[in-house]
Image (cartoon, rainbow, N blue to C red; front, side, top):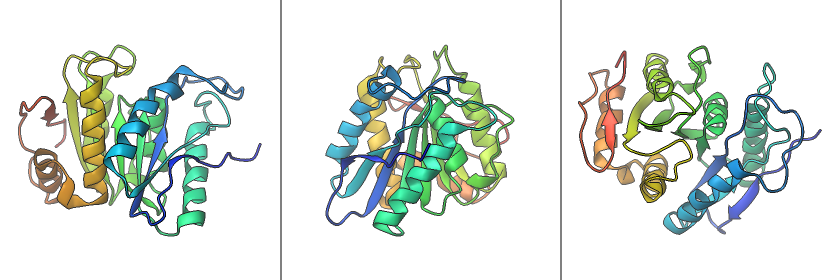
Amino acid sequence: MEPHPPVFHRRPEHPRGAVLLLHGGRETGPEEPPPWNLPGQRMRPFASALRRGLPDAVVARVRYRHRGWNPPRADAARDAVAALDGLAEEFGDLPVVLVGHSMGGRAALWAAGHPSVQGVVGLASWAPPEDPVEQLAGRRVVMFHSDRDRMTDPRGSWLCVARARQAGAAACGVRISGSDHAMLRRAALWHALTVRVVAGLLDPALMPPEIAAELAADAGGGPPPGPRRIGYEPIPVPGG
């Protein structure tokens, strides 16, 4: 089956960057996804928030060929790379930020080595400790996770941040207190922070200062700052 082209939510005439959204899924399920599926619907509010907040950016999403990750094929990651190739073919060397939820976060991390990718935002990502991180070298990675997630373990995100740092990425973790895997509780915070961080990954001057400080400290090799409470919590991670 040939890869699907990206589905566009916004396509400005003179874009300054692009955001590629990747929704979640399950571990196995090789059939083609239905036109309407709940994991895909969870990303629609993010697409709307990004359209409003980043009027000069392309906003698109990956359309998977198969449901599930389907090891060892890693179908979602392969579809993410194909979508990135499609964006590069149409827009040239436009910088891209990947935003992935759950399985989509895993796919975004795997696809981050694509030359178009400038940064990754992981939302409650499925991040097994055995996954590769070498492809994250030179990228900026911000991982959001709720402390009450019962579907994917937030410790996987924090360990991913630590491993990404060791591989040469600038990375930090952000704890969303009192939310859930589906990002329904405190949804407005998830949406607003994602827009602000994506804007900062495309233009460092726009990064929220507390996250910029953690990324800069990491890039300089020093210890990450301690936790702060500002409606959300950037946190230090093992190995930082």
